[in-house]
Length: 354
Image (cartoon, rainbow, N blue to C red):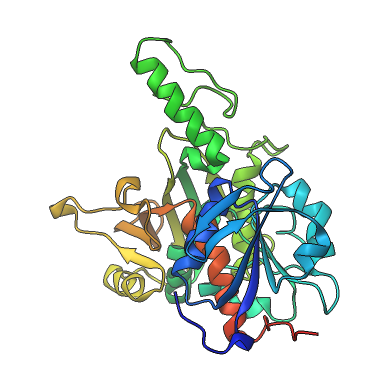
């Protein structure tokens, strides 16, 4: 982490939900980030308040969350559910003396006045706003590859099938997979228990994430459609179709993506664009058995992209596979990069001490 000499240029940063899977990763990303953290504050429920968290910024006592305390910070990361965000986020951000709020939930993603940000694509959208929405993990991971290709060839249609890890349901989801797998392997049960997922996840895949909508898609699938349009500034009727499937892996989401493009596809140019794109790692050497996998993408900041080939169904079509860490690019890393971008573009300024 960068050492800030002038205290005036460092920020007081608050994390709400720092004991959860995403919250822990936000603290971890801040530790490695050049973002100048002068002071870290951790807010929790009455259950965790008073306990101590060991961080790269020292041992920090968890404070009981209160809006007034959160407003004292320069920037607040919300790693909590949508209901909590709806109740508190705007109150924390309100007025010149409020904090900038970067919210990881889906609560504000579709609000016209709230930027939905993947910094490598639309960092400028954060200017003039104190409440920023972090995108859905599946969308953020896919867009890292889609955006450079859109700039190159112009996207006409996007068709995506996902292979989503248990971490999409947070630490409880990962725990359910681990415990359920153990119980089946030990012969304690024929089929694992499920409280978090719609069906037992060990030795299974579940084509059902979030609630089913009237059009037959799930909300998770529609989030990819809605958020891709908003982040990439595409028309409201731009065709994006997704099938989202939960698979028994820990924390990296994979996606098979087919795009139809305006211009003819040049695979060499596509590879070059992806090699040069920030936040992307081209892993595409099939002869050597190299392609994106959860095993290699887990714990990595970059999203792996590979299996690039011309699609056989569309005249101008490209098909590829991506894998990215759901808790990092899909959540915590993206949120911290938003703060870094806002620091750089002037959307975030340290409060002047009274």
